[in-house]
Image 1 (cartoon, rainbow, N blue to C red):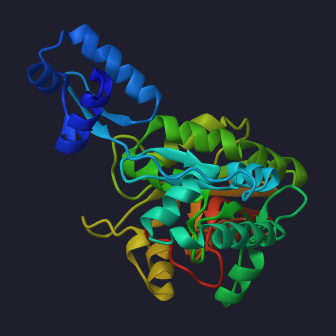
Image 2 (cartoon, rainbow, N blue to C red):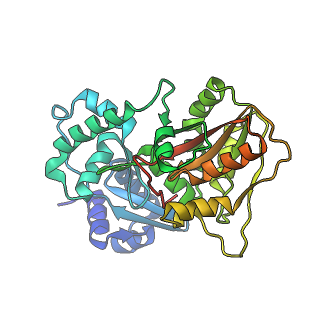
Length: 328
């Protein structure tokens, strides 16, 4: 015969979701006793808690099969913990082998778990080799092959947005959901993660002014504005603005053709600052897809100040060739 806690768990499993009031009516238990059982079930990972008071729901959480620690080596466990994140459809952050196991289960590849783990680790280690001594990826070669004339002197990003087959990287996922959900927690998390990269760039290339690419779509919380606050860089700032000839605001991410992105950047982004006579300017954006925005700003800066060196930085960039990052 099942105990009270197990019966509550089975009740939630059968109903798919339940509130405390539902459980109270079903089992004729006091609220404090119900909460005590629910807290225990939450700690054991048997259920999930969704929503905020007064609308809180508890859902059943089927536990995945445990992985034999002898199959997944300690070294691989550590590597995955640092290099893999799976964000579930309800917003659970699962790092390492726990997240990887969830991903293979949801993509119906459970029987290939170990080969996929080994393939991912090998692939991720190979991509990490592209990083320079400062831990940054150099996007200059990619952009130079994209544009007939590249006005940027150097371009860097902290990580790829996504990897073939395995999907978005840790930074790619965090950036996507930071922008989509306007989560201040995620914006701060991303900012703290990449701040050392930005500071290394500023120090190595003796940057003496910065500029942030302004947002297009109005939002209550703008990622780039909050990102700028969290970075808190003590350098002169060149003000950029976006202005459109019509009331329809066309974001870069909605355009799939390179020539459309170039035209959009050329006719929508402008320099507001009167003085831009600096030796080395760093333009900061959240993501590099085609690089059209960064290159167009660099063009306008050099039209005014030809001797200025212009550098570009983004949190993430596309993996290969001209690639449109349409989600962010």
